[in-house]
Image 1 (spheres, rainbow, N blue to C red):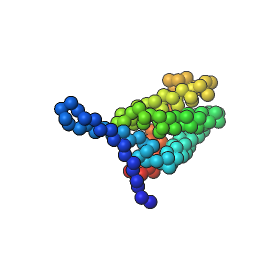
Image 2 (image 1 turned 180 degrees about the horizontal axis):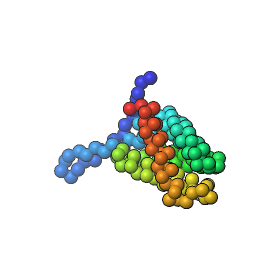
Image 3 (image 1 turned 135 degrees about the vertical axis):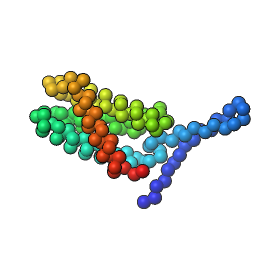
Image 4 (image 1 turned 45 degrees about the vertical axis):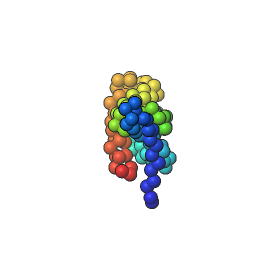
Length: 143
């Protein structure tokens, strides 16, 4: 399989006559939709397995695992399709997207499982699940 990247640049002519180039390539155009599908499936599988093991250990109801699926089903498309339109720098993108995802998914876990979590107690669970999917998912994604 051949890797084809479609890069988009913006060229600006500075007042001193020099040219400034800015990379405006989004993750969607540079990697394509198939990479999103792969990342989404890997994320769901890893986080659902992690949530299932955690729920068995803590004796949590099925709604906990379902809240993880719900949170990921909303957050993953947002960070793949919306955030790259706003943030061009890959390092900044990773920091902001992972922080937003952790907070959003913790909020979903809390809202769906109020009898078992408050927002603060849902945060470390969300950090754990997202760290799992970030690390393990990175092992299965092309470089």
